[in-house]
Amino acid sequence: MSTPTNVAKQAVHDKIESQVKTVQAKLDALKAKAEAAKAIAEIKSIADLVVKKQAIDRKLSELKKSGETTYEQAKADIESRVADLEKSMQAIEAKFKAA
Image 1 (cartoon, one colour):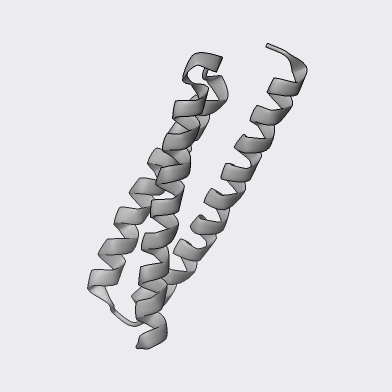
Image 2 (cartoon, rainbow, N blue to C red):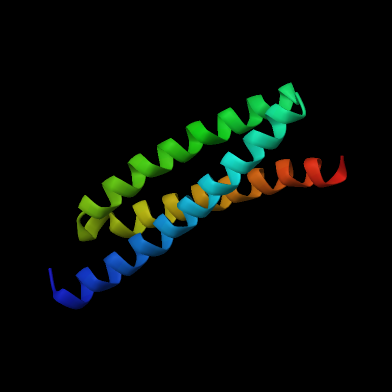
């Protein structure tokens, strides 16, 4: 595998990892708000998102090890999962802003 390919893969990995870390920080803040407000439904939703985030962490680890034949598909899968996670998190954030 060439060095430019490795650099490009590392850049993608770093970008996705950064997105995941941002989502995790927001989830932590939302969980604290939900617990303070005794918002049971939101706490459950946040717990579900944490499980999704953990699955993304595992997939991200697999992405780093993937070969060229599976890399693009694995990357697209992870990016889709991250987008879904961000969208779900934003929906929960909107509930708190509206409340």
